[in-house]
Length: 308
Image (cartoon, rainbow, N blue to C red):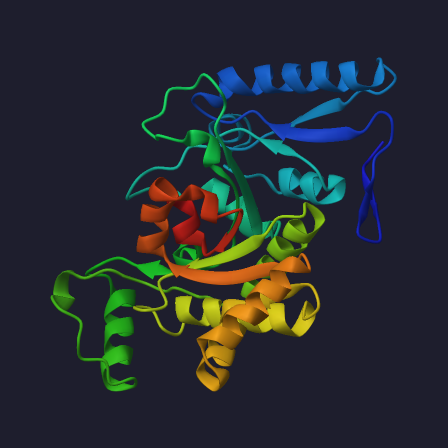
């Protein structure tokens, strides 16, 4: 039986049908083992009364060799119908060939959150002095940014049109070495930002975590990554005014009434169990994850930053 949705909840039958893609390369080795581990966990958790029915779907090299398509339409349709699925790693040529099948799946199925829990497991070697302090869940936007794949290769007629448009219509004259330049577009939307940040805040509230940090490079990319920061704060203050306290609000109180009043407002909010919404430049964040990882519990960030 298929997994279905009832409101915001998944309805899972005792024997759900879950499609999977084996994947390329190491996927052929690890995916069968992943399925075995999941089967064992399901069996142990309910005494054998429930069991997953696995359905293999074709994608990647296996699909191309068998069906002549890297990502058959049937695979996409089955994933859409079943809501839940598993995918092994798929091949992505570097600098040539087909575009990333992983990105295509995310975009076609609108898998807008890439959820990445980061934990230290006792016994694992690490250069960190206090690895036990690392406990962060990353919400990476998964459909926009540079990963949208809107780009043109240097020297192509399409690229020349883009350069001409930028120069003549938009007044852009700062592109160095235009004859050998490739160009990519970085789309970042308010809607895409809001749904990601909303998911991160809801996660923090559900798991009683103290903060959500917006990680960005808004100091350089003011309208894309800067927009992510601005829209993220606006979403928190508009939809979660009683459950969050933002650094944006803290700075507003500080500017109007002074630091002491702002600190009092912050302390009062924290004593009430509110989630603190803050932001940090990506460079500083990466440094702080090593120096003071305990400052971060939930992170919301853009596609490229989240991949780092």
